[in-house]
Length: 82
Image 1 (cartoon, rainbow, N blue to C red):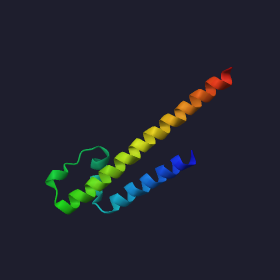
Image 2: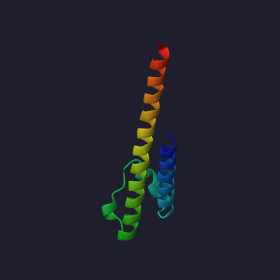
Image 3: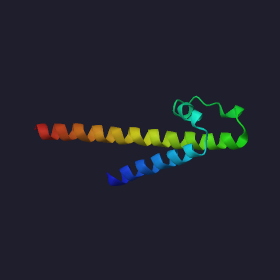
Image 4: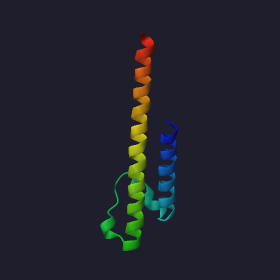
């Protein structure tokens, strides 16, 4: 499970680093998928897209980790019940 946590840390750091390159008012929009990057200047659009991608990886990884932990607890509960 340790490599899984390391991956979480890496994704979190990548997202945090990506956010450093863009104005703070875009953070909520990125997290709620409410950014229309087509209307933004090229350089800013690229930076925001990078942050969006990093956020999506982080969210996906968090969901997978949560699912595995819940599944592990359920299996452990059922095995321990017998």
